[in-house]
Length: 231
Image (cartoon, rainbow, N blue to C red; front, side, top):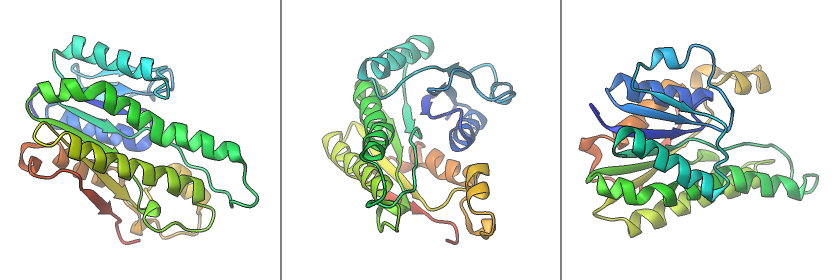
């Protein structure tokens, strides 16, 4: 990945930071994009001088998505990969839940991904070896109780991935990873009795994403790849 330019959205969170670290370690120049204003303390120092943090960006706004892609291309001179980590989760049963949850998760999971893909695809095609990797969810393949809004919106990410892969064949590969439970501090707090050793480590998921953007993965497109650990 030496010299490649990569955008990671949701990059100030646990998974996004792990993805950014994996790309930086592989020699890529990384733009970390997030709605939060500033990255966690110490994160940028681990990534080297070629990384840039772009905070305070609302990717539910197509104009802001377009602007941040233009900013990154102006800084790096190119764009080779887009990794859409940005998203959200809520657990609530459908009968007792709020319609607002559906609107929120649609915006966080589908709209952010769609806006960034649309904004970036021309520059990715121009690179000659462009890649998009979206973060879907194993829970969107078979939804559980309380997972209706989350599963439905992540399923939207899956279908977007497939459609865009067909549209961009020969120009940009488009794939998605479908993790089960990711080992994050929030998930540990929410499920204190769970066997966390069965969960997916963020660094392991980041390596799958890194592979999908690498030259050996050029023949893979439209794939929804389960990354389920031992769940």
